[in-house]
Image (cartoon, rainbow, N blue to C red; front, side, top):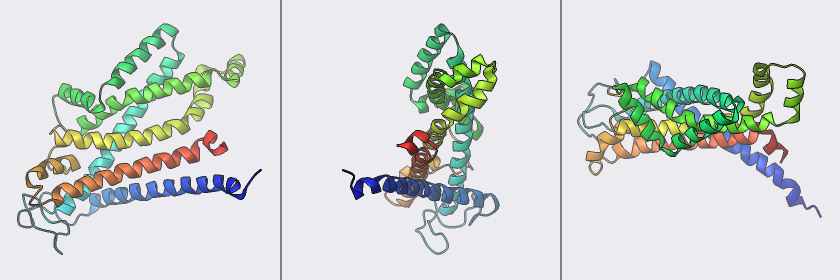
Length: 284
């Protein structure tokens, strides 16, 4: 027997999914707005010593100053821009490489497909940060561009594996066989049938890759392999604050809160996208 609660449950789930999506958009939107704002304006010169060392928060410096006397709020705002640039760049590189390799593997012969799948399993077994560190070390230079490229390479294996699995599932469907029988080229099958069907799942993966890239970049900067000064990466701010965590705790707390809020926003956005663009979830 159908009850009112059973009828209302799907509506509640849809409302929750919508709230999740909007919460993620709000959190990520704040970081995007702050990052864009720093392109044209910031409270102080990012590299200017505008106060005393390790000053407490005040009306002049809302988040205090760092160990060199620079405004800490300005450093945090610049960090948002760095995180967004790295996350977007790394996710884009990982998506281009991963989707291309995944599609090629799905259309390859069984021997090549098995070899490619085994290679991906080995790469995925390595931590993303370790692969990024190896790529940066091979580039023999630590800068923002090398960090983005290294993270993109590290994340591409996950995207390639997911693309390969999704594509092979789609290739087994009847309408793909009908398209091949009608003379549609493989390129046409990819763009007309495969990519539109796997895109909902891939879009969620891309959002999650963005969050992973932001965390990995902060880790690289903490280890001295990310964006060098004067780029105010959150990881570098955490590294600089570890010696003054007891005397000036805001130096360690503020970058951590900023990083966590961005990652939470990305995860909420990914969950909301999954609920809104995946037709199977909408049907359920």
